[in-house]
Length: 114
Image 1 (cartoon, rainbow, N blue to C red):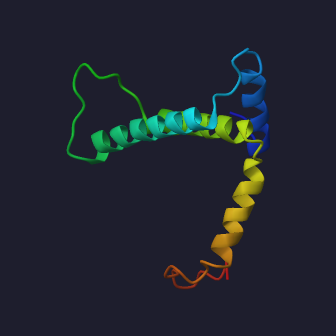
Image 2: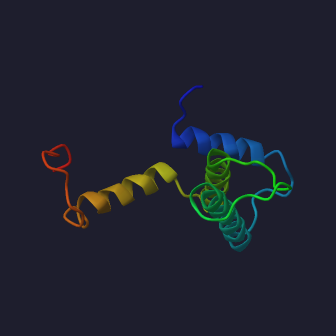
């Protein structure tokens, strides 16, 4: 399986969505879809780690599939708002390396990120 950058994934999703007259959903609809997908992941996590086993009639899905669905919808959401997710990731990691750098207890000898 080939490695893709986030930018390549955003371009691939945009090429896919651009085939259709409907295009991207509105931001509110996109947020609803994202919430729905997170709910489906929550259900899978609960089946696997929680106390709620799957019913025999329920489709077998994996957390990997559900995370893929979330990623696809998140990319659609970002594309619809013209947000570069690589830039967004850089911004959030900068926040963790500066503002939140002393928030968590480091593992002894972890000098890599200091």
